[in-house]
Length: 256
Image 1 (cartoon, rainbow, N blue to C red):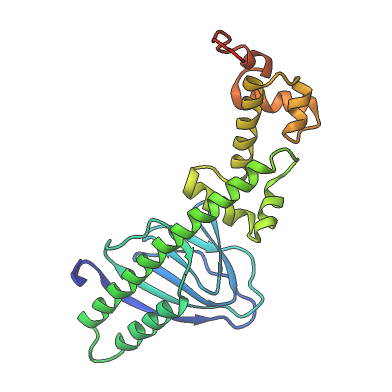
Image 2: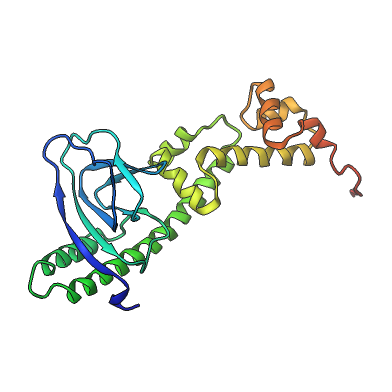
């Protein structure tokens, strides 16, 4: 991919003084925010992103975004604006595997953009930066899928208890919103939906493969409130547990 597919526009490094929140904006250019210090929340559309040192966020041209809440501690980040659709990210927000490599490329780009070598050199350095971001995003996706698999398995083996999204997030040391994004990227379900899905899979397995009573099954999936169990199943499956159990009753069995 040639440097002609992207064009560096402008950039810099922002450092807050005192309390700060990102202003509401809609850029005419694409923008990468590369956080080096502090923590901030930025909302893009209906999605809220938590940014901290080592995080990056891609803001697509024309998308409204704004800060949410006030950052009371020092916040610092590189901001890079450009035109062109080369290497647009599949994941708009992720944590860098090697932050230093990206920070160094940002400094090089900003340095050369203010020299007589600006222009084609800036565009070339921009493409190198975008390539590095793309590579680290892919590595992060691999690690995210591994994390999603671990979370999904933990939910499966603990579904006999009344677990919720906060407990799962605390178990792995992440924020609920972050784990939801990881699971949604891997399996299409957020954290709460994954817990519900795992619970439903176990309920249906027990209904079809055991002679346990409905009360016993409810207890096996961490739902001591029997009425809530019935309501939960009907909401997700559209039929009652008893009606579901009557599905496909005719099949050959044998033993020895």
